[in-house]
Image 1 (cartoon, rainbow, N blue to C red):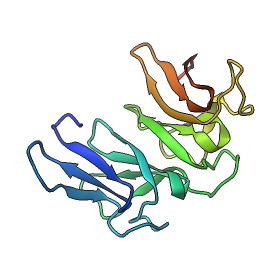
Image 2: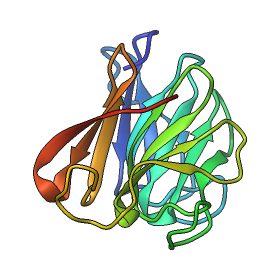
Image 3: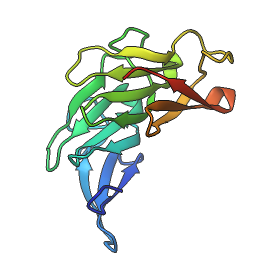
Image 4: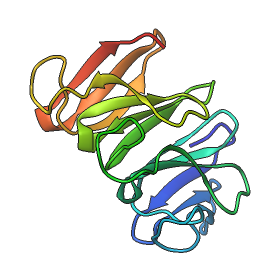
Amino acid sequence: MDSMGYLYISDCKKNAVKRYRVGEQYGIVVAGRNGAGNRLDQLDGPYYMFVDHEHSLCVSACLNDRMVKWTDNAKEGIIVAGGHGKGNNLTQSPNPTGLFVDHLGTVYVADCGNHRVMRWCNRAIQGNVIAGGNGGAEHGNQLRNPEDLSFDQRGNLYVVDYGNHRVQRFDIQK
Protein backbone atom coordinates (compact mmCIF):
# COMPACT_ATOMS: atom_id res chain seq x y z
CA MET A 1 0.00 0.00 0.00
CA ASP A 2 1.33 3.44 -0.82
CA SER A 3 1.05 6.71 1.13
CA MET A 4 -2.12 7.66 -0.78
CA GLY A 5 -3.89 4.46 0.28
CA TYR A 6 -3.64 2.56 -3.00
CA LEU A 7 -3.16 -1.20 -2.86
CA TYR A 8 -0.98 -2.83 -5.53
CA ILE A 9 -1.59 -6.45 -6.53
CA SER A 10 0.68 -8.49 -8.79
CA ASP A 11 -1.21 -10.76 -11.19
CA CYS A 12 1.43 -13.30 -12.19
CA LYS A 13 -1.00 -15.18 -14.44
CA LYS A 14 -1.70 -12.05 -16.54
CA ASN A 15 1.83 -10.63 -16.08
CA ALA A 16 0.53 -7.30 -14.86
CA VAL A 17 0.23 -5.18 -11.71
CA LYS A 18 -3.09 -3.59 -10.75
CA ARG A 19 -3.74 -0.68 -8.41
CA TYR A 20 -6.90 -0.52 -6.27
CA ARG A 21 -8.46 2.15 -4.12
CA VAL A 22 -9.86 0.99 -0.80
CA GLY A 23 -13.38 -0.32 -1.42
CA GLU A 24 -12.90 -0.50 -5.19
CA GLN A 25 -13.88 -3.79 -6.83
CA TYR A 26 -11.97 -3.35 -10.08
CA GLY A 27 -8.46 -1.98 -10.14
CA ILE A 28 -6.58 -0.47 -13.03
CA VAL A 29 -3.53 -1.98 -14.69
CA VAL A 30 -0.50 0.19 -13.94
CA ALA A 31 2.27 -2.06 -15.29
CA GLY A 32 2.46 -4.81 -17.90
CA ARG A 33 -0.52 -4.27 -20.16
CA ASN A 34 0.30 -6.66 -23.00
CA GLY A 35 0.93 -10.13 -21.60
CA ALA A 36 4.25 -11.88 -21.03
CA GLY A 37 7.22 -10.67 -23.03
CA ASN A 38 10.44 -8.66 -23.17
CA ARG A 39 9.15 -5.36 -24.51
CA LEU A 40 9.14 -2.37 -22.16
CA ASP A 41 5.33 -2.49 -22.00
CA GLN A 42 5.42 -6.12 -20.86
CA LEU A 43 6.37 -8.09 -17.76
CA ASP A 44 7.09 -11.77 -17.27
CA GLY A 45 6.81 -13.09 -13.74
CA PRO A 46 6.07 -9.91 -11.76
CA TYR A 47 6.51 -11.50 -8.34
CA TYR A 48 7.77 -8.65 -6.16
CA MET A 49 7.24 -4.88 -6.23
CA PHE A 50 8.07 -1.71 -4.37
CA VAL A 51 6.31 1.67 -4.47
CA ASP A 52 8.68 4.57 -3.80
CA HIS A 53 8.04 7.99 -2.24
CA GLU A 54 7.22 9.45 -5.70
CA HIS A 55 4.57 6.73 -6.24
CA SER A 56 6.64 5.06 -8.93
CA LEU A 57 6.28 1.30 -9.05
CA CYS A 58 9.39 -0.86 -9.32
CA VAL A 59 8.64 -4.46 -10.34
CA SER A 60 10.89 -7.48 -10.09
CA ALA A 61 10.15 -9.35 -13.33
CA CYS A 62 11.65 -12.68 -12.33
CA LEU A 63 11.24 -14.44 -15.69
CA ASN A 64 12.61 -11.39 -17.58
CA ASP A 65 15.69 -11.23 -15.32
CA ARG A 66 15.17 -7.51 -14.75
CA MET A 67 13.68 -4.82 -12.52
CA VAL A 68 11.42 -2.32 -14.25
CA LYS A 69 10.27 1.09 -12.97
CA TRP A 70 6.83 2.41 -13.96
CA THR A 71 6.07 6.04 -13.25
CA ASP A 72 2.47 7.12 -12.72
CA ASN A 73 0.42 6.80 -15.95
CA ALA A 74 3.39 5.39 -17.92
CA LYS A 75 2.66 3.26 -20.99
CA GLU A 76 5.94 1.38 -20.63
CA GLY A 77 8.57 0.80 -17.99
CA ILE A 78 12.23 1.73 -17.65
CA ILE A 79 14.77 -1.01 -16.88
CA VAL A 80 16.55 0.02 -13.67
CA ALA A 81 18.51 -3.19 -13.00
CA GLY A 82 19.37 -6.35 -14.90
CA GLY A 83 17.83 -6.94 -18.29
CA HIS A 84 20.88 -8.62 -19.81
CA GLY A 85 19.76 -12.24 -19.54
CA LYS A 86 20.95 -14.97 -17.23
CA GLY A 87 24.49 -15.02 -15.90
CA ASN A 88 26.62 -13.75 -13.03
CA ASN A 89 28.03 -10.55 -14.54
CA LEU A 90 27.34 -7.31 -12.69
CA THR A 91 24.89 -6.33 -15.47
CA GLN A 92 22.81 -9.46 -14.91
CA SER A 93 20.33 -10.56 -12.29
CA PRO A 94 18.80 -13.96 -13.06
CA ASN A 95 15.54 -14.67 -11.25
CA PRO A 96 15.42 -11.46 -9.20
CA THR A 97 12.98 -11.58 -6.32
CA GLY A 98 12.64 -9.07 -3.47
CA LEU A 99 13.62 -5.45 -3.93
CA PHE A 100 13.85 -2.15 -2.11
CA VAL A 101 14.23 1.38 -3.52
CA ASP A 102 15.69 4.13 -1.33
CA HIS A 103 15.05 7.88 -1.46
CA LEU A 104 17.93 8.36 -3.95
CA GLY A 105 16.46 5.85 -6.40
CA THR A 106 19.04 3.18 -5.58
CA VAL A 107 17.58 -0.28 -6.18
CA TYR A 108 18.53 -3.18 -3.90
CA VAL A 109 17.76 -6.62 -5.33
CA ALA A 110 17.69 -10.15 -3.97
CA ASP A 111 19.48 -11.85 -6.89
CA CYS A 112 18.19 -15.34 -6.18
CA GLY A 113 19.88 -17.00 -9.16
CA ASN A 114 23.35 -15.84 -8.12
CA HIS A 115 22.91 -16.21 -4.34
CA ARG A 116 23.62 -12.53 -3.72
CA VAL A 117 22.14 -9.11 -2.98
CA MET A 118 23.00 -6.32 -5.39
CA ARG A 119 22.84 -2.54 -5.24
CA TRP A 120 22.07 -0.61 -8.44
CA CYS A 121 22.63 3.14 -8.10
CA ASN A 122 20.24 5.40 -9.98
CA ARG A 123 20.95 5.23 -13.75
CA ALA A 124 23.84 2.77 -13.29
CA ILE A 125 24.60 0.30 -16.09
CA GLN A 126 25.73 -2.35 -13.62
CA GLY A 127 25.23 -3.17 -9.98
CA ASN A 128 27.61 -4.16 -7.21
CA VAL A 129 27.39 -7.08 -4.81
CA ILE A 130 26.73 -6.04 -1.20
CA ALA A 131 25.98 -9.46 0.35
CA GLY A 132 26.64 -13.05 -0.65
CA GLY A 133 27.77 -13.81 -4.19
CA ASN A 134 30.43 -16.22 -2.99
CA GLY A 135 28.69 -19.54 -3.53
CA GLY A 136 25.30 -20.75 -2.40
CA ALA A 137 26.21 -22.28 0.95
CA GLU A 138 25.36 -21.98 4.63
CA HIS A 139 28.26 -19.96 6.05
CA GLY A 140 27.48 -16.59 7.66
CA ASN A 141 28.81 -14.60 4.71
CA GLN A 142 26.95 -16.70 2.13
CA LEU A 143 23.38 -16.83 0.86
CA ARG A 144 21.44 -19.61 -0.81
CA ASN A 145 18.52 -18.37 -2.92
CA PRO A 146 17.86 -15.04 -1.17
CA GLU A 147 14.14 -14.35 -1.50
CA ASP A 148 13.44 -10.90 -0.05
CA LEU A 149 15.12 -8.01 1.74
CA SER A 150 14.47 -4.95 3.84
CA PHE A 151 16.29 -2.26 5.80
CA ASP A 152 15.81 -1.07 9.37
CA GLN A 153 16.06 2.56 10.52
CA ARG A 154 19.79 2.18 11.18
CA GLY A 155 20.50 1.05 7.62
CA ASN A 156 21.05 -2.61 8.43
CA LEU A 157 20.13 -4.94 5.59
CA TYR A 158 17.93 -7.95 6.39
CA VAL A 159 17.83 -10.79 3.88
CA VAL A 160 15.43 -13.73 3.77
CA ASP A 161 17.97 -16.48 3.06
CA TYR A 162 15.37 -18.96 1.79
CA GLY A 163 17.72 -21.81 0.90
CA ASN A 164 19.31 -21.75 4.35
CA HIS A 165 16.02 -21.28 6.26
CA ARG A 166 17.13 -18.12 8.03
CA VAL A 167 17.05 -14.34 8.03
CA GLN A 168 20.45 -12.67 7.97
CA ARG A 169 21.43 -9.15 8.97
CA PHE A 170 24.24 -7.32 7.21
CA ASP A 171 25.84 -4.02 8.18
CA ILE A 172 26.53 -2.37 4.84
CA GLN A 173 27.84 1.03 3.86
CA LYS A 174 25.18 2.77 1.77
